[in-house]
Structure formats: C-alpha cells, structure tokens
Amino acid sequence: MRLAHNLFVGALGSVAPALLGLIMVPVYLHFLGAEQYGLIAFYLLLQSLVQVFDAGITTTVNREVARSCVEGSHADIMTTARLVQALAWLSWGIAAVIAISLLLLAPFVVRSWLQLHQLSMHQATMALALMAVTLGLRWPIGLYQSVLLGAEKIIRSSQINLVMVMLLYGGAGLIVAWVSSDVRYFFAWNALVGLLHVLTMRASAAQTLTPPADFRPHFDVLLRVWRFSFVMFLISMIGMIYMQMDKLLLSHLLTLEQFGQYALASLAASGFYIIVMPVFNVAYPRFSMLIASGNREELIHFYRDFCYLQSCFLFPLVLAFIIGGEALVRIWTHDASLALLVAPIMALLGIGCALHGMMFLPHALTLAAGAVRLALYVNIMVLVLAVPLVWFLALHHGALGAAVAWLAFQSAHLFFGSWLTHRVLLPGMELPWLVSDIGPPLVVAVGMGMAIWLARGGAGGDVRFGSGNDAVWTGGALCIATWGLLWLTSSRLRRGCRNFLINS
Image (cartoon, rainbow, N blue to C red):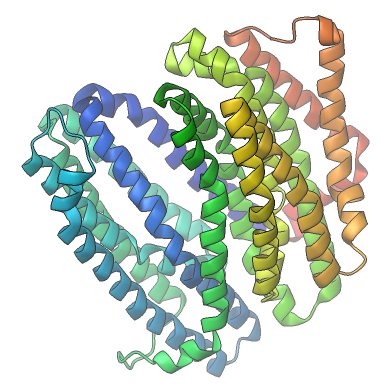
C-alpha cells in the first residue's frame, strides 16, 4: 500500500496548491488591482525562471538518496549524507547570489522594465526587494524535499507542502482583505512563510538522512556526481526553452489580446502536469532502487504496469477536457466569446500535454539508470524539431498554428523519444511499450470520442456540447464511461490496480 498512499498524497499535494492558486487569483485582483497583481505575476515568472537552475541538484539528491536506501551500508549512507551537506552549502550559496543580485537589480528593473502607472517607484522597488528575499529563501526547499522523495517519504513531504501552501494563501488572503491592499505586505508574508517552509523541510530532511557530525562541507564528494548534475542542468535548460518558446514567439507575433488567449489556453492545458508529476515523484526513486538492487525483471514489470495504469487514467481525462473545456473557461472567466476562441487551442494543447505526460516515466527510467546523456539527446532532438515547426505554423496561422505544432512535436516525442529510450535501456521493449502499454487505452479513448462525434452527425453536425454545465457533465460522464469500459475489458488493468494497491 506504500506506493498507493504515496501517489494519492502526492497527487493531493499537487492538486491542492494549483486549485488554491486559481481560487486566489480573483481575490488578488479584487483587493490589489490589476497593476499590483502584475507584480505577483512577475514574481511567478521569476520563480519559474530561476528554478530551472535547481534541476541538477534536486534530481541528483533524489537519485543518490534512493540508491543509498537500497545499498544500506553505513559507508554508503554517510557518503550520501556528506553529498547532501555539500549540495546544501552550494544551494544556500546560490540562494544568496540570487537574492543579492535581484536586490541590486531591483531599482533598474523598476525604472527600465516595468511599466508603472499607479504604483510609485518606491513601492515597486520594495516589492521587488521582498521578492528577492522570498526567492532566495525558497531555493533550498527543493534540495531538502528531494531527500524526502528519494527516501520515499512522499507523504511527509506533501504534508509539509500542504500546510505551508494553506498558510501562505490563507494568510495572504486575510492580509490583502483585512490588513492592507499594499502588495508589499503580500510579499512580506511570502518571505515569512518561505523562511518557515525551508526550516521545516530542512529539519524533516535531517530526520530522514542524519547529517554528518562535521559541519565542514566535503566538496570532494561532488566529483562523483558533477557530470550527472551538469547534464541535468542542460536538460532542464533545453526543457524550459521548448516548453516556453511557443509563448515567447507568440508574444512577438501576436497582438497582446491574442497572446493572452493562448496563455490562458496553455495554463488550462498544463493542468495535466499536476496529475503527471506525482506519478513521476513516486516512480523515479522506485526505479532508482530497483536498478541499484539489480532486479531487472521486477524493474521491467513495475515500469510497464505503471505506464499502462497512467495511460488508462490519463487518456479518458483528455476526452472530458476537450468536451467540457469551453464551458469551464466560460464559467471561470464569465466571457462567452473568449471561451469560444480559446476552446480549440486548449483542446490541441491538452492532447499534446497528455502525450508529453506519458514520456515522464521513460524520462524517470533514464535518470534512474544514470543515462543522462540519452535524456539530453532526446531533449535536443525534440528542440530541433520543435523550434522551426512552432515558428512556421505560428507565423502563418497564429495561436492555433502554434497549438498544432505543440501537438505535432509531442506526438513525435512520444514515438521517437520512447523508441530511443527503450532501445538503449530496455532492448526489445520499443514496440511492446507503444502497442501494449500505451496503445489500448489510447485506442479506447479515441474510439469513444469518435463514437460521440459520429453520433452528433460527424463533420456535418454540431460537435459542440454547449457552454454551460451540460457540457461539463457530458465530458465527465464520458470520461467515467471510458474508465469503466477499460476496467471491464482489461484484465491487465484490474490485475495492475490490485497489485499496486496490495503489493506495492
């Protein structure tokens, strides 16, 4: 039951912050106004940009802690503890550089980059200074969280994150509603919660992996992992480029209003990653443990079953997303014309995100095996395909063209990326993975969608399901019906769920 509990709590830990974030957006807009909320959006952008440099450290810690849990000797555990200690010194050093750099750049950013109308330069500069402190405090959290994830302490990690998220959003809501509508108070509260979060996560990591008695950092232990960490940094950089390049290109090619529509559709479609990331966080340390133990047969069995279960769960959700997407946007934004424009873009992006999500488990297998160069080659291959395709289609067809390009190169990523990964790591699994582990759920989901489409008249009929609650209920019912059909027709799904719940 351990993996099942970990996956459930991990999913809750991903879904709850996302939902709270969406709920708080209208609250911030109401009490702070559009301009001050723009500073919050700028902070979120900075947070996503600086976190890319952390990928090498957190992925390395996750893998090394998981391997030490399997090997289990005192020497291995102490070596890993010294590694974590050295990386913690490095993380705090990077955090200080980030905070000081942003503090020094704050006046320049306010004068030369931000377009202020109602806010004074003093207010904006103070807000950016508090952002700098908050970003510096949040940086080491990923390292300490990776210690917990590597040791499969996902429940503890999720509990800490959930408490901190509720404290952050709850306190911020009370502050902007009852204390002050000055955004500086908002960022001051963020900095305070960030300090509490990192101290709590550090204490929990110390309980999981006892730090060495010698407080002096042993940087020599970094020599055995620096290649892995550096390549992970490159992978993360490439991933950020191809994940964000469509929005970067469209911000130049489209009007601001059209770009806003695409950004809204992209935000909605990215919800699939909320589902996929907990699966990755559960699977990655388990893959690392199985590889370290040399149990190849169990690794293949666990990997393929996990991929099959994820595809059975994910693809029916895409149906609900396509059918109910327009209605959800209309309900959320109260703008019928905006929902109508966003719906086709959102559908294409959603399908692409689901296909991309299926590559998270092959990626986890690659990292667990230490084959980071393979992961780098796959990401470079995707980037080389994606850049010209997005540029050409966006240039000629705007936002819809960029969405088509996203779906096209994610489809190529699923086919060619998985083929290359399995050919190197699991020879003989190239075709079975596509045909047996991904194919059946995808065929059933597509078949259900086609049946509904034909029932409504095919190309000559009205394929829209309305824009109110009926469309949401229809999408949800079709998703549940597809899950039910898969459950009834797939003994492998029933067996996999039973094994996952009982024997994991």
